[in-house]
Length: 229
View (spheres, rainbow, N blue to C red):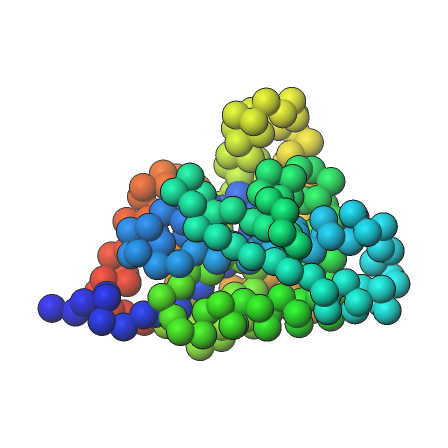
């Protein structure tokens, strides 16, 4: 019988915001005993670094200096990965609204993406990793052993994001959240550098009517069958 533990695979999960990819990736990583790499958090950390240092995103020389000195670490925790920026735990800060919008802007900058891709490839070079993002299967790991592209309708995604915000005590309107998701989708799919798109060999997964458990089980069964994407 095929044993998932005999070979450490690279699993890429892409898709728009609130499609379920991050939550599913984390749960799947635990199930497979793989390392989960939150690539979105890496861009958020970059955005926070630029904000803390008052760097104009159009000031390329300053951005280059920032990237040469930036230190981003992702450490495993039973309660969820901890993200450290230059030695400081920024796990909560990078999830706030101002960083969410800024991260989408900084992700369009070529030198930033190149730096992050180098870091992501270094982390995943030995396999046994699950990465989620918007260009993992197309740019970061085009030869990933398994590729999934997760989607869901806008209303479902907005409701998910609203529930997440409510749990954190954030008072956001469902309508505003939906508008932000639509804006980010347009921004991510239209950018010239590494746009959000489904890899030709990725397996599409519509999560609109699926629970997280359903999503994890769906991907797990495909991987256990050993049918590479």
